[in-house]
Image (cartoon, rainbow, N blue to C red):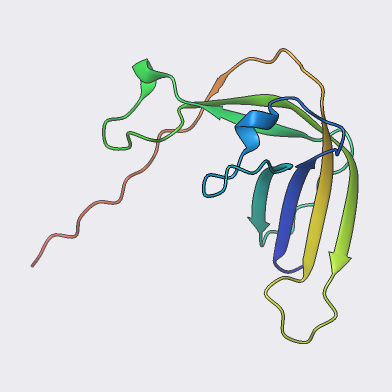
Length: 126
């Protein structure tokens, strides 16, 4: 499969953290939890899949990347159903648009350190 646009949405009845899901420019609430652009051959998320949460733990932060997350964990939003819409256009940005509907189902999982960020090195002039 080619390039996919995967949207994770809160089920219409989910109110958990609704205020955190507001659009910056309008203040309106959104049900979109996350978006992924995927060009891999990995399988699509299925019911039971959980989004990962990313956190920044200051004592592990790298001053070269001040806004970067340092840890992640399996999150509280669980996919309950998946809809896939394939493009039938000969020229399209995406081969498929996938909507993963999620509900809030808290779990206790450990924070896991993320791999160290590999910064690009400046090329030396010869």
